[in-house]
Each structure stands twice: as structure tokens, then as C-alpha cells.
Length: 114
Length: 111
Image 1 (cartoon, rainbow over the protein chains, first blue to last red):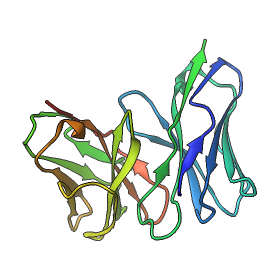
Image 2: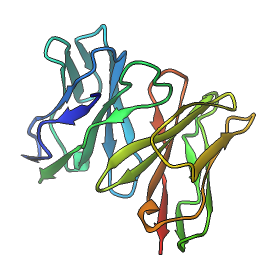
Image 3: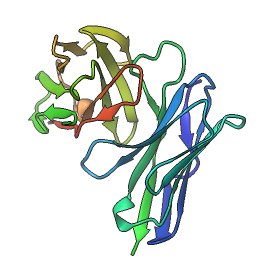
């Protein structure tokens, strides 16, 4: 069935380290994927997205890699800061008639230690 | 440009009551999607509206309904509330079909 999953539920890093959060998906028909950051008590905040015709996209301190062969994407955060501590979700429209419907992974809890 | 706004931010209701939540999308966005977020089920899609029409619906009972107005503002209604309806209800807007931007959510507690 359609799903977006994450390899690890938690990730703990030291301030200044680089963080990598992984995500696997099952439906090849998705046109794009999105990474969101959600802090406690807040709604998901858009970080970066990537279209299916791209392999890599960079933002400010973040890079998303898309490997369509193995249906895998990752979010890399450079020089992780305590303010990056949050839950990170990958999401995507899972093909077919999916107007406005994003399927989310379970989330990875990122904890950054000063 | 202002982000997605949701009102109220917090709500406490008792079983059997009904509730209406409101969402104002980003200016120019005509697509509004609603999600329910719980610790056990994560983020689950409720429905999506575009130009006052519901185009997509998730697997929720008929007690959950919504509508969209001509200015793209949207409301969702839950009737006959159950304890299990306690959740964070999130609204997201987009230039359909495209990346969705979320509001802060409405925290609903059903007692």
C-alpha cells in the first residue's frame, strides 16, 4: 500500500554536528516530496521540497537528496543547532487522485545537545 | 505575506457536543486541506477543498465535515464528539497542487 516511512524514530546529535534524517516511500508516482519540522505545540513548518525530476536540492543549512531507484530520500542539516530540535516529517502526495492529500511518515525526533 | 491562521487555538468540549474550527489560508491560496494529528495515528488527512468544492476525503466518519467559502476560508465541523476526537487539528493551504503550508493548529480536548 501507499506509505512514507522513516528508518529511525529518534536521532541525538551534538551541537555543530551534521544530522541526516532518512525516509523511505513506496509509491513511485509522487511528483514531489516535502520535509517539515514540527516543534512542540506548533504546526508543521515547511523546510524544503524536492520535485521528482531532481536528485538534490539545497536550502539554508539543509540539503534533500532523492534516490528514486531505491525510493529513498534524506534530509541533511549542516552544523545542527539546539533550535533544530524538533520532530521531522517527510511527506508526499502518493499518486492517483490525491488532491490536497499528503501522506506523512511517522516522524523522527531530533535532539541536539549543546 | 501572512501565514495560515486557525481559530480557536484551544478548545475544550464534552462528549456529544459539536465543534466548528476555522482556517484562513495564505492569501492567493485556493486549496485548503485538513488533518488530524494524534500521538497514536500521526497526521491523517481529513479532506481538501478547492474553490468551495470538496475534491478529496480521507477515511473519517461522516461526523467530520467541512466547507469552504468564496474567499477560500474554510471551516470544519465535528458533530457528536467522542473522546477519541481529542487531537490537534491542522489546516494547510497551497497553490494546488503544490507544497502545503500549515497553520498552528487547534488543540481540541473532549472530556
